[in-house]
Image: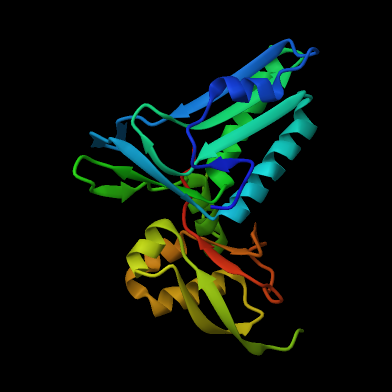
Length: 160
Length: 87
């Protein structure tokens, strides 16, 4: 895999991410950590997730998301790292670190960044069960609804 | 109105679509410009068993999503982005 700044095969380090955004003028640092859970959409007993991405596009999109949220949110800094490859149950799959002068901006910006990554970045996950069987996650509904509304202009969908 | 022309296009697939089609890429001939929905419809006609996935996918050109109603042409890479699930 090419060297990238937002995607990695390596285990994520919370303290490293905190240090990337820490500043003397920050009164708040929010660290969002997305972890692998053992259930999803009725599927239980998940032991790992395998992440795949269109890497060059995902890198650019995450960089765009970070830049746009920084511009609109009055935060000081944002850092994102997302795992690729196999991530075991309980391990961290993604970290979003945000620093801001005040907590409200940091909380809001963190939420915006992770929501946009989940809805827009070309990253997919396959949920793995004991024995190696697995299934692809159904994916982001906003993405699906966007496609429906495009193909059928009369579609009346509500985004969540 | 832009003149239509045949162009050989290399298409890349990922995740569930790659697995279902048993290939990460294929080469097709498209009559460009085509809109995003027309490209997806055409690919679904080539792979009817995977039509539901194509119809819930988006087209990315040169590492970016495209406006759905614009005629698409003049690109280097074409990726089919099935519903994403990062995070």
